[in-house]
Every structure is written in structure tokens, then in C-alpha cells.
Image 1 (spheres, rainbow, N blue to C red):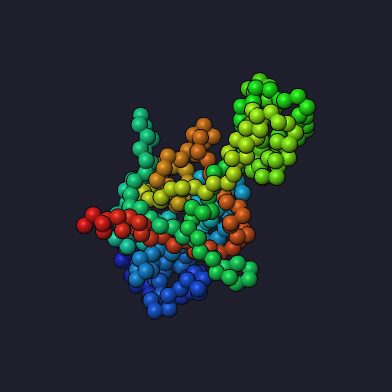
Image 2 (tube, helix red, strand yellow):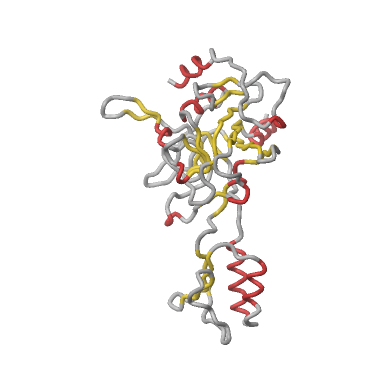
Length: 302
């Protein structure tokens, strides 16, 4: 089915602006070939890339996806695009990549596997300046939550306002709690209340825990999977939203190469790196290609 899609796309040789900022376009290369009627998925065979034209749909919230098809999981995805996930799959096949498998959930969890990928995002700001960053720079560990540090008791003379939604003390668990990212100035201001070493160490721990940290991972071409409905219709499961995932799903087309839960109990949650992401509605092109590092490592072994 996907190979047939590739052959059909071969007749589309329309030269068009593919949404990549001009600063990053290669005038000497042939224009990318659109793979769908919406012209949102393009094959740059000469550049070894699949290009997906998307729009920013979320800058704050808990993430399960980095990018999803339109009208699926925009409430938990930074980007969405008007098109089919299987078209992106077809483009990766056209680059000579063979999918592995999505995460497997059973008695023993199996990480998603497949060819390693490089993902970049390109866009223009309101001043027309072009930007290009690795996709993982737009994803960080959750900061809009409470962080905890052990503290046997609050030192004498330190008054923690019970109405303060940022710093709290829980006498039951004997923990000092802080919500969100603690700045250096905030840490120093609270530490100035007491010379107590345990109290100061707890504040230092809260400060360090709460600092934004971008996700460190590689991306893999997991390939999703097909399923057959009771009516006998074959469906590509990633169409439900799992185009590019940051939480492991059994139907992911592209996933992170780490164990990443989609629940609080899983212990690994991500959110958009808000300060690095342009406003909602901004057109963004995702560049997907075989990992340069993987290619170099393979070359070293030959």
C-alpha cells in the first residue's frame, strides 16, 4: 500500500515553495516533490529528506506528541499538519529507510526500534528572520509541577506563607515543595531567611531540580502498523495522532528511543520548551532524514 503510494506520488513533479525559509534552501538542488494533494509532505530526494509542513498548535501543556495529523491530538502536540501519517511513512521508504517496530507492551517492555533519524524544525519569525533548530530543543522535562526536597523541619524564624502557591512545606512527608522553575534570585532570597544547612540544601535541590532541561534522545522510524476494522477496512494506526511521539505508543510512526511514559506514574513527562517555540499559528517545516551520526558510525565500521 505504501509502496503504491510512492509510485503514485512520482507523477507529481510540481515545483513549489515548500515552506523552508529561503536561507536554508539550496538553489542548486531540484525542488522537492509533493507527495500528497495538500502539498504538506514533500520528498527532497537529492537532499535525503522528507519535509513536513506544519503549524504550531501548542506551546504549554503536557506532551505526548511532537507532531500529529490535523484534528487528532493537537491538545498534546506542539505541531500539527494537514495530511496523512502514511504519506510521511511513504516518504521515508522512498529515502531507502526500512521501519523497525513501535514500543511493545507486555510482560516485558520493548523500546521502539528502527533507523535513527535527525529531525529539525525551520521557520521565520515576525521580522522575516529564518531559524533552524533540532526538534529535541523544543521539548523539555515538565517544569509546571511541584518539586520536593527532604527537610525534617522548617528552621525557627523562617515563615512560609500558607497562601503561597509556590513554596510550601508538608509536615506529613517532611518535604519542602516548590512549584515551577526557581530562579537564582528566588533561591538566594529564600536562603537568606536562615543559615540552617539542611534548609539551604533543600532550596538548592529544588532550584536544581526545577531548571528546564531539554530532552536528550534520538528519534527512530518505528513505522506504526496496520489494523483491520470489523468492516474489513485496513487502517494505518498512526493516523489517530501518533506521527512523531515523545511518549511511547504502540502505533507510533516516529518515536523517541527511550522509555517514555504517557502517564504520571511512568515518571517521565515532557512539555514544550515554551520560550524557544514561535507563536501558535506559525508555519513550521519539519526536516526528517537518516541520522548523520548513525551514517558516520556505520561508515567507521566498514
